[in-house]
Image (cartoon, rainbow, N blue to C red; front, side, top):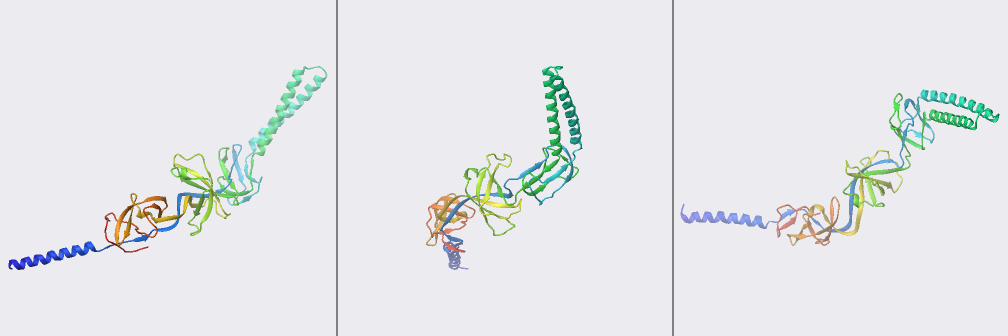
Length: 335
């Protein structure tokens, strides 16, 4: 092959390479673009909560005694004063019989000493001692009789048995919770909030709640209270929420809770994924330009842009790491 032909081939290959590179370089990159828009921006605190009675009442024994019978089950409605649990009262009845005997003996002694005192046969001190002993015996009898009555554990409120943790034959003690009562018509939601989010929680803030049990259903409520003491193990605090409208919700139902801590009605909104290190990519005349942006409220999907972006600007929704200033860009999936 002649030298001229070799140079010709080399020139053609080089031209092809340069042409391909030029075509590649000037070819716009296809990226997902979206417009900055005006809309409400909200700042949310996410938490998990559950439904419970507004005033749950724990049922426990005042005495230590075996359980003879349990008269109600979970889900049963009860009235105030209704018997719930019967305890073995054999020991208490024995103590009552002993107290009665001592009371009768003390009363007989009191009468005898009082008569003798009236006749001048005993001193006033002896009379006073007999009266005091009889009063103490009568008080001991009343206490023993009250203890016998405590072997019947009764409902302190009208409501429903939410939880039952006792069976006949078990031992009831004052420190053991046997049942949990509550009024299903009066409920609240208790949410666990990360301690980092606690400074943003205020009484009266709106809360939006949902459950997998009812897809698409949103329950609205308000922050009613923030417990003053947190759990150092979980590094969290409990927030009490009240529903805006009464709802028939089962006790113990788990809810996803979003507490609205701040809101701007007319904000410039951009995708949260579009903002990186305080900058955003704007597309003008088919080219990408990196701009500084000052952000405001942020939620899971959108971010408020307080400066650096105008409504209607085309934004690179999720900019690639190799995007460079001035790159040609075209919409590959505008939203």
